[in-house]
Amino acid sequence: MRIATYFRPVDTDTLSRLHEATLKVLSDTGIVFQSDECLDILKKHGAKIDGQIAFLPDQMVESAVKSAPSDFEWEARNPDRSIDLGINQTGIHVSSNNGPIYIQDIDRGRRLGTMEDLINLYKLAQHSSTCSINGQIPVEPSDVTHPLRYLDIFHQLLKHSDKPLFGYVGDCEEIGRMFDMVRISLGADLADDSVFDSHRIGVSLNPLSPLQFDRIPCESLLAYAKLRQPVLVLTCAMAGVTSPVDPMGTVVLQNAEILAGLTLAQLISPGTPVVYSPASAVPNMRSAAYVTGSPVSNLINMTGIQLARELYEIPSRCMAGLTDAKVPDCQAGYETMQTYMMLAMAGVNMVNECYGVLDAIMTVSYEKFIMDDEIMSRAACAMAGIDMMEPGFSTEIIKEIGHGGSYLMHPSTMAHCRKFWTPEISTMDSYETWESKGSKDATQAANTRFKEILAECPDRIIDPEIDQALEAYIRKI
Image 1 (tube, rainbow, N blue to C red):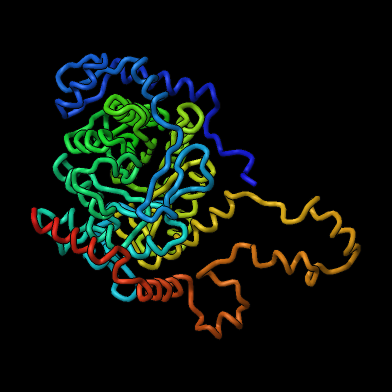
Image 2 (image 1 turned 45 degrees about the vertical axis):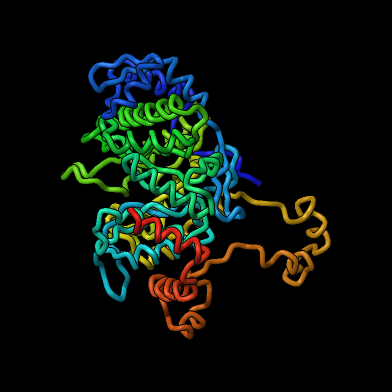
């Protein structure tokens, strides 16, 4: 039984006013696109162009919103792992992280990430029951610096995951090579574009706030949209720094950037899936530094999610599970649960930056990865609502047991007692039982668990011949 309602930060009238303000920004102030091809496409469809600034007429934007699909299937190499993403989906889809520089655990402390760490995170995401989409760069591999590093990274993703794929931004040539590797991984010829008749690989691209798309996001959008692969337009504006200090002004600027990217994607290939991806934040106003733990940041992005869900009827994604804590402590726990649950209650379709992220996305912790997996499992249980196990709300059973009886050994209890949510690393034992098992706190239990998972993971989950073909492709470039 789905929950009856979502958390709505603003009323319907305010949503309409936010949309009207956004259209005014797009038509009067415009958006910079640092790409002649993008500007030519926009001009051809009626946008006014002044240098690199495109002024988007209202009708163009509103037609594009109608063109963007409300839901779509994101296909995996393993068909059993394909997902439906959109306004009618069940539950929340979670994707792996992108962007941390450092890795840490309680054994070795904080250090620069390596390719081994990157592979470990791909393996943990593949193993996770809450992770729906694998990819991006969950930690930067500092020991790989050659020009084709992005292909080596992508090779490792294909080698260790068969879930729906998240690719990377890049220029058209770089993305074309990644698409070649997708073809190889599916056993297709390099000239076979029919592979992309399905939605195989998505990309998250960032406008440069305020109101700009620089060259790489433009080229990424062009490359993915031409093959109608999912595009996630992610604005990460900072109130008072790269967007108005007024949170509602930040909502409008963020909305303008996302709708500009959506409009361009629809003009390139109508029907291209676009995922509305608000990620703006209120910074530390003492230093203007990016921080993630403010509930006001969540409210800004929840309003964006509400626009996507109620007004535009398109899928949404947001960063969740974030914290400014430096270790997986109490602060990390309550900020992670705060960001995740607030967005879940807003009706977001997809979240990322959820697995082990610390220190405003600078660091990822192995132990927190496991702890966050459980947090998301708890939230998923809450958002799934409550189902009726017995007909008639158990009134006949209540009558049968009567006054002062016990339900413990009743057949209905025996039938359903194992269906309740239980934690993987949190303890529900008595103090004495917990003590007899080593008195481990959650961090220590998570440390043990991530090592067990990695020890159980296979060396590869892709066919060895395809793995060799991918390796050969990279070495030929």
